[in-house]
Length: 235
Length: 235
DNA sequence: TTTGTGTAAATTGTAGACAATATGTATTTT
DNA sequence: AAAATACATATTGTCTACAATTTACACAAA
Image (cartoon, rainbow over all chains, first blue to last red; front, side, top):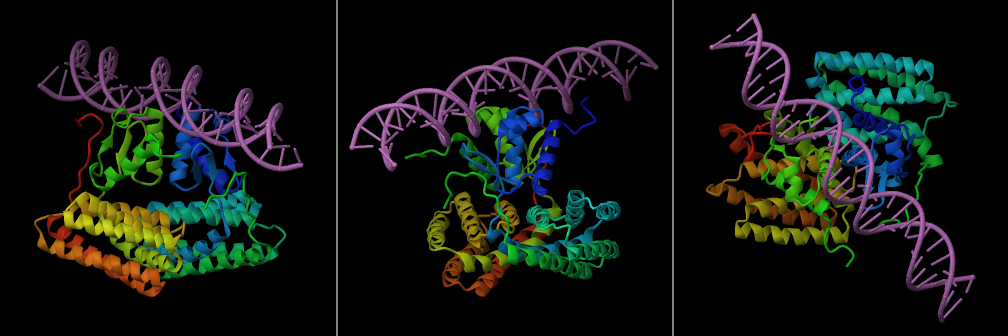
């Protein structure tokens, strides 16, 4: 009863990341240490270690004597996202095509297969997480520890934003997902061929598709921003 | 005053960052929890929280059941650094010129004043930390949470690499430092004027200066890479 | 009614002790 | 003598309990 799981602590870490990415834990909400510790069947010290690591990775924000808050998303967040995304996505795709290993490309193919399966089955959360995983592997391929932190941060919020705008009744979104899935296949092919320039170009196109989708919803409706219950706004 | 001292825990966090940046704790060395806890006069749980946060920020690497290791620097590290630095430095400088506040510009001036003072006094560690602080404030000015993680990571290793190559007997380095200090003044002026393009351009020039310095030493001599030892041999 | 203060409850921060795991050494066996 | 295993030791991981800080509420005074 010890080896099969990768220790309860790392399971807790992974699950909290997942819940934040899927917006099961919404941006801005405050986390209760005792509640989480009980839920994951660990005591508070290791849970606090997990929260501290998540703080370093910018999944959560720590407030002194006030606990942990899921990293909020503001209006400015979206603007900054639009500035940083194309640059980093293109750079990472270029490096991925240059440095990808055989095993990594195999991983990518496996994920893509499961990704298409999730699309067919209409499993939104699973599809979103697999999309995140797909792009995370591309980030690993780039193998650059200086681009990785921002790339990971981008993926966190790209995933969260994607979850915000999901609407099963919008047929256009289904169409766009089909295009996105095809682009994933193109990514695999270009990376396998080592075509760095084309991969960077495709990354921009892939981003533009996503951006158009986000803008369609963000402009008229506005971004839903749960605030949590912070007593006084800083600054 | 409500917070005259910044709690022993955050003091520990800051000091460990400083010691890693100045290579007082060299890349690759393993950290002893009990030893550090005693040194900072706190118990192991809060120290472990600090180490977990540093792991999230990529100052250290956590090994299961083997403690924390100061983030190593390899040969590949330097190559990746050269790829990422110009892109991010330029982007951040551009955004800093667009978004800087009056207070931040005042901070920058204050730091620059102390920076020149440290140069005159030949205080290497202080100069290096103030240089790091100067560029960290520019990062804050850019105010983009997606670029910030990689930018911070870059600054960590730029500072560590700079500490590696310091050589007080090399007159050329003194000359280059004078140029760098003048460029800092240019940064302040351009940011104050809101000239984003010129600031981005200057960032590239500033980087090229630093790159030339690094290459001069890295190419003939090779990078000194302490490997560290498993927790036993130290002391 | 409003505002200020004091006390109580709840939550976060810390400490010390204990359990689990890995490493090093010594002894035994081939 | 060399290798493998078992034991001893050291270090990491976790838990329970306690201290400190903050928040909420009640009550009193203006």
